[in-house]
Length: 323
Image: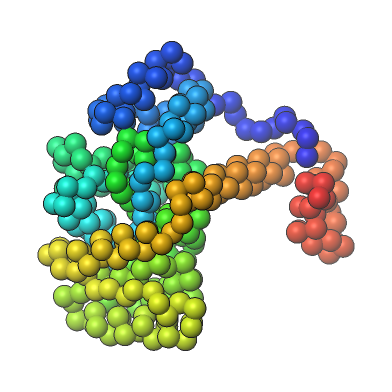
């Protein structure tokens, strides 16, 4: 598909001048919060300054361990992330947090804003929190999240924590982006446990039963252990119990994250996987826009073939892509 028209709107213009990028990167590397925030904003909106800014950040990438926190709504993800931040800071580590929130249907921005429950981040230069809108991506992450990871990595944070929207089984994009995937459940979620067994369980590197002081926590733990036992290739996954409000189990969780992260391959391979995700997402978005907006005879003809059953949608897509 060589047609480069209809590739979507042009990138928003930036107030960041190209000649100011080296100074911005230098201040970001020094841990200046305003510089980090400015870089994150440019990368989130993919402004005209974002590509040269990403290029300038490249020499400083590969330090951070990226940890995804996902699971059904009500599992206490934000509270647990806050507890993890507090523990890591008590050990002298630094943390960047990307909290992906549902999008406003009007503005496209994050509805929940910066998570007020992440109180460990207040007035702490060793922590940086940014809420990003999911912008309708059912996988729970938008491509902006991957670009922001690079900014936080270059800024020297030891851990970058991704907290996804919390829509259950649809949050599979985190598997392509995070170095370590932490799937969180809690007692009393009912059918959400069953959905997690058939979906999120497959991407987990670590399973956590949060709200461990509640009735039914031990039963939930045993249910997850039982679900793993019938998947012989997954039986090695740690299953931990935490109570985020008191900090119980959080040190063990952080230790498990670091242990699993140490087995995840070299930094370049992890970054390459995230780049592949960005390419795949961008290609899918371009094709989707073309199919929805182009009224040309080629696509109409393919649509008619799909409607008549002469070809499958998969074959029609291959024809459209010329493969």
